[in-house]
Image (cartoon, rainbow, N blue to C red):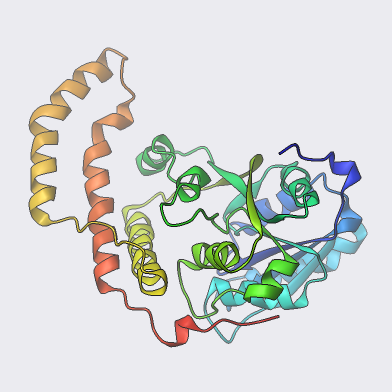
Length: 320
């Protein structure tokens, strides 16, 4: 599909960003939002404080007060009842004026032309969802470089899901009419809600999905083992929740026996070969530890999937 030129299709856009303890990320995020090339009179930014315990509220209040002088529409909202990014997004959707809802996260860095490239596909009246791409911010730690080498956050992986394609809410846009038909996010879900909302729209309506590959936000990968473990446990919980909602297959269990085998093979065979290639400049150094990190992630995902159980409350859908 050939996207129309940005200056011929300029719908009112509402950018929705849930924030929890985001004081570190907010300065860069706000700068990225201010730098957007989409016409400022056609976009509002709704930042929702999801009961943060740091200085998020104060930063948002100050930014909101100074925004009019800078010529942009920034709104500070609060969702304190439910600790869930999906509940926070619903709070913003209800308060929004736009015909197109655009979602990203506090730890993302949208490129200046992000909205300019993400919105035009909606000129096609059959398009209900537009998915933009997610790229890595430059990483400093080994874990960040590992995730970057594996292209872990790319939307191309979720768009290839065997059940139905979907986009992560780090870079996703949805037409208001689509949400009016299928409802909002499940507010009590803690993970997997992006797949759920995309699948409901595609399975229950005739709206189509479009991939705007050049509409890019950058995302910071996890830099510590603790954060990496939490991320992959969350992926496992998402697998379980979506299995219970849609019957999709669970990820294969990663056993201790498999871990021992893979790590033994890595230590005895892979590591000597890759060390030689690294010393000769033929292989990036990060390749030396790919296998143990991959095993660590697989174990965390299995643990998250095994421990998860979708509550009855988490199946509830809110409506506009």
